[in-house]
Length: 357
Image (cartoon, rainbow, N blue to C red; front, top):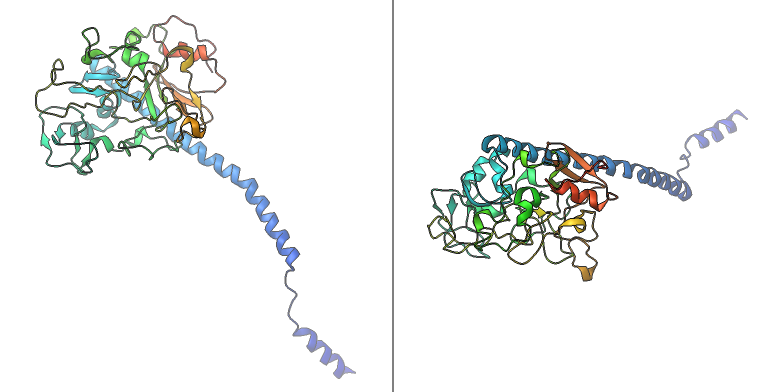
């Protein structure tokens, strides 16, 4: 008997353990899927929070740069024009020296006089002896076009439209200036290049903090604006865009044979709240100027379902981040009243904005 027990005992000891059944494996996989599904929104929310903080930090650096610029010149730079030693330059170019980007600002003194649309690389750039950002300006460090220079402080990591520009990528941007402040409300519909509105001051509101009589804590200085926005027609946001095509007889223009396309103000300008481009685009003014939150299909035109309006401030965050003149950064919700938004754009409109979010 003991021999038989030993035999059966040894038989049991060498049998393989039972594995998982198909049903058990499916249950485990389902549980893992549920856990991943529960964790994914939290991970995405954490990533968006980090991107939002970076976006806020970018706009904070911009507004601090403008405050430093104001301290140096006792006024704010224009939306576009002559300022601070630079000829016919846009707002975001004037901002560069105060963002520790003076080397890029200086690049506008180097120009390829033979530059043409579609030319991939510069040919034999020369030194002009002055700073003037034009189509032919050259980034000497990389031997590329200055217009395609990426500025980290001008790019919001939540802007999914970055990198989809035409000949301005990677010089595309995610922020814009309030025209009513920098360009001046009197210039918002101006046809530039006339005796009444000459190039030099057509987009220059000569703004000072003292001229913001509505209060620096009630007036918007900068806002987010998507880098590509085709719902109302091909458009976008380009940090070097904002000046006008000026002829050889432009008042005070340097005479050097430089290509005369000095970044025309048009559908690609980093502008909102007002202003008229040389291509006829009018950046929306008044109650219709309210920003867009996550507009549908910004890379598509209206017939394809695109709803992004190139004339408006816009964001892909849950709230739009703006910088106030006093330097504060705040988020505005999509439910904000259109009147309040417009009142916050006018620096001297006399409105009360006590219901600001």
